Length: 166
Image 1 (spheres, rainbow, N blue to C red):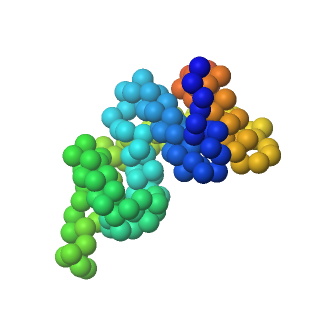
Image 2 (cartoon, one colour):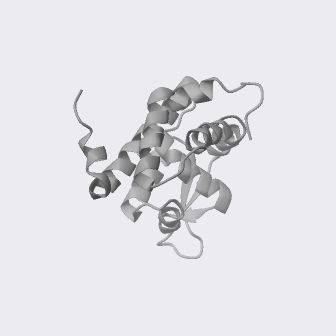
Image 3 (cartoon, one colour):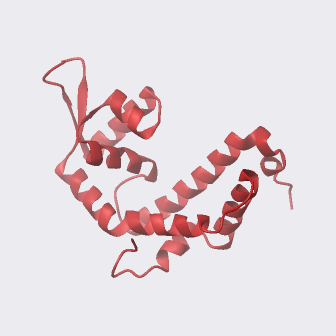
């Protein structure tokens, strides 16, 4: 077995370790979304949630709300628009600004997700994090071990289907 250099380098590679865990979680959430036939990428969920919670947003506001760069928010907005999940219109107050809002298809996807998917993902990730204690690097190792032992999509699959967990 090859040594896990990123883990062994500790704080030096903390950003890489966070990214690795984040990418694994996104990949597993994507597997769940695909199994449910939901036409969205896991990386797009925070943007849809932001527009749902905050109402129409400019690209800059979306970037701020989900903690990404403005070019990243522009790419995300374009993807969501091409998928028919958001509508992008010029602001009536300032023609230079474009406002992003959910389409009917986007609202329906968000409502389905809030009811049937997001609570189950939240419960599965909370289960992984429930017993974390000690120094940060040890907690990250525990998260990685939990994901190796029972991947997120399997944790979600074993939850009751008739009623999402809260």
